[in-house]
Length: 158
Length: 110
Image 1: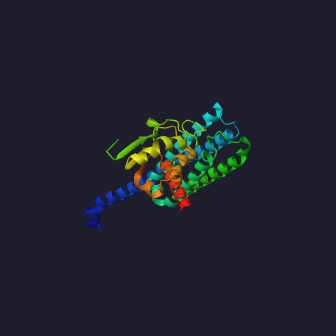
Image 2: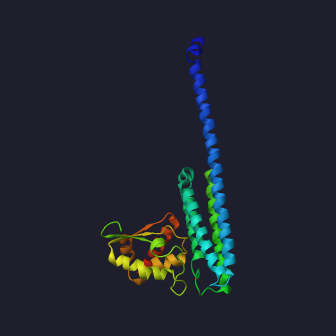
Image 3: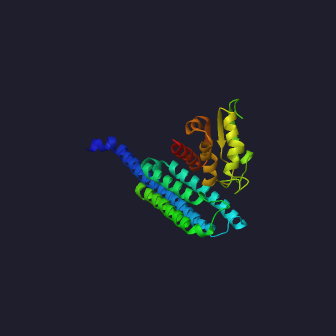
């Protein structure tokens, strides 16, 4: 026994130290990754809510006005940003490998939300303010679906 | 223009940085106008076209549907468009929607 300790003692010490460092490092990386993803998912959810709110205001403005035109550009810019944020999330290795189906569901929800806001009479001179309520409710329900999908994907990834 | 048979169209540079609206009556930078004045003639002229969506302030789906889904209503088949047209975009949502509009319109026609 003494011979073993003399011969391999320092080796065992280093092996334990390396394994310990590995465990601590993996755990720290996981925590860091979780924090970053949480922040990205929260940002995407917050932007989704902002789009739904702005769309609600937009539906109540008269078409062909400066206010309406400004909201249209802002909505398109926000969707561009949201599309990029979801794309970035889908490129995250942990999300991509473990949550590919749920991310696909999030993309589909994003598509439905995108169409419900910027389809139909969006940017049209024929847009009727009185018809806005149905559109607002449809967009709101699609925005909630998107947020739910993103949160589910995040919760299941960790 | 990359080769003799390939034509690259940048919407921001050749059409507008603020494309919007479905029909010409809605906007001077509508999807209908883009399709009629730029996209459809390019498809007839070149073997392959690359449509670059980057550089604009974003797109509404009404613009994209009328510009690209409208190609099928105008007479191009979805198969031809898949062969002849490439979409370049840093926002994958746009290119995915464009192909969905084309395929949906194509299946409606069959």
